[in-house]
Length: 242
Image (cartoon, rainbow, N blue to C red):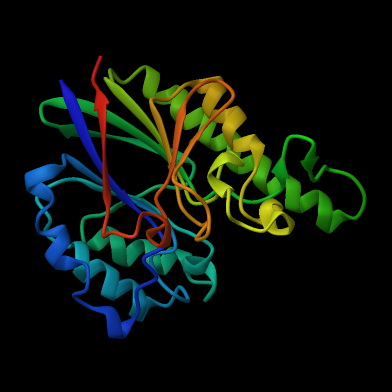
């Protein structure tokens, strides 16, 4: 059995982009069993923009699972953005997991926005000023919640487990981005969480100038599905349900 996972992030929708993705999304039933949205669904995180996204995905004949991105927090109304998306049938995750039925198979998705901090050898630490400590602790809390959510899926008879984030867990998929901003694009703590708990695939966005393919130190495939990277309405990945 193969599960077909469609994924895209960083679609950055606003009032003038209504309907741009819907024609492509209407083809999903022919090529995918599940749609993942990897954050930055809006431009500024306003309810108006969230409603544009909601109309774009409402009524699709397959499960839609999402995390929010940094843009979706900009207007400081992430709860309202989440509410609007959930009313449209989207499962929005933040430090939790969900199980969806895909082609008669149980697929588990654990999701969190994630945060920055950098990667092994070039990362921030919990030292110094309180604001710096809180920066790193924010990432650690996010990674810990992702790890716990993935572990929880272990006991829920999932044939496939996917980690969904906005920020990147690895530096591989940042290739093409300026090195100076890598600490603001992701954190190795997310990869540690994924390797500790285990997953069949990790999906993220955020890095518009990055590259699609990467891998954690533990061998989990990582895919950057930011729309400027994949240059399509979505990409489909095939996972063997074991």
